[in-house]
Image 1 (cartoon, rainbow, N blue to C red):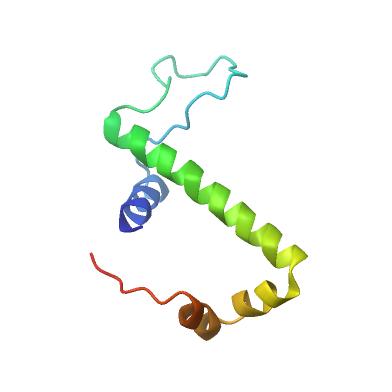
Image 2 (cartoon, helix red, strand yellow):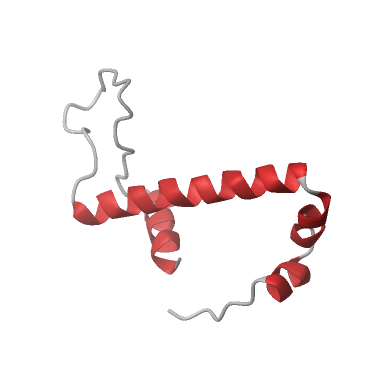
Length: 88
C-alpha cells in the first residue's frame, strides 16, 4: 500500500506518470508519451488500476448494502473491522 501512496505522491508532485492505452488510442501531443517510462511505472499503473477497481467495488457495496455502509461511515468502525499494522 505504501508503494501506491509513493507512486501517487510522485504523480501529484509532477512526476511523469502516464496511464497505458486502453485500445481506444488517440494521437497525443507528446510523441514520447506512449506509456510508462519504465517497469516501475508500469507496476505502479497496474497497482493503481487494481486499487481503483477495489475502491469502486467498495463504493458500490456501500450504496447497495446498509450494514456495510454503516461500517464504512466511521473511521473507528473501519479500523475495528479491518485492523492493519502499518509498516514502511
